[in-house]
Amino acid sequence: MTITYPADRAGRASRAVKAKICGLTTLDITRRVVKCGPDHIGFVFAPSRRQVLPLEVNHWLKTLKAEGAALPGTVGVFVQPTRQALQEVLDAAPLDAVQFNAEHDPSLLEWVKSKYNVGVWVTVPIGSGSHAEQDGKDPVMPEMGIIRQIPFIDVILLDTHHPAQGGGSGKTFDWNVIPSYQELLRNCGLPLYVAGGLGPENVASLLARHQVHGVDVSSGVETNGTKDIDKVASFIERVSHHDN
Image 1 (cartoon, helix red, strand yellow):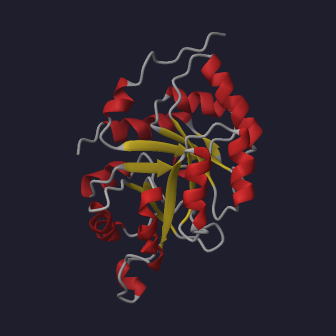
Image 2 (cartoon, one colour):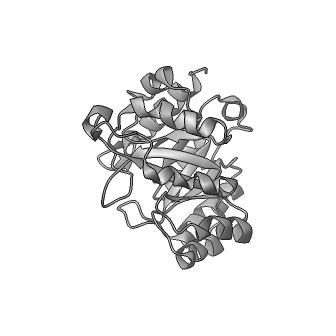
């Protein structure tokens, strides 16, 4: 069977808001998602039901390139990795970026960028309750002390806080906190991405309310725990049709 990929990604290149599809777990799923034209794809290396091995990802990416795929940006997802964990993955898989929780070892950022020349995405966990339920506290969490490390950060990603998972709960947070982060990051020049409970049914609503740089989805484009390509295509289409 001949695998046909778009000759280029003109639509992806001109998309005002970037779309990341995360949690890819097999070669076939990765192939089918790539054909939908996301801006980024994510592979989970932290403990998770979606966890994959770096040598698997290496094989998948090499296979797709051999088939003529125009690969989107590839992001390795961790939580609070050690240097050894990052090194084991990045030595085995050709990733464009790494993503981990805001509560990381501060020395990791400079080290991983200097050693591997990869992008760094930092996930800031947000409480799932409304702002009013957070006892009137400033919605910008203490983790934003990472602004001191901005020279080594490429993307800030807001995701729903989960005590055990450090994000990736598949639930939405109160979007009313987004402007506070936008204001904080505006002078830093860092793009702001949003995750947490997004899917084809609500991503347009988010983008109508907030001018974020990108959106990230995993469980929201799954059916019975497996990536649903119709949902993936619908999600990317709705992001593509949004015009900031």
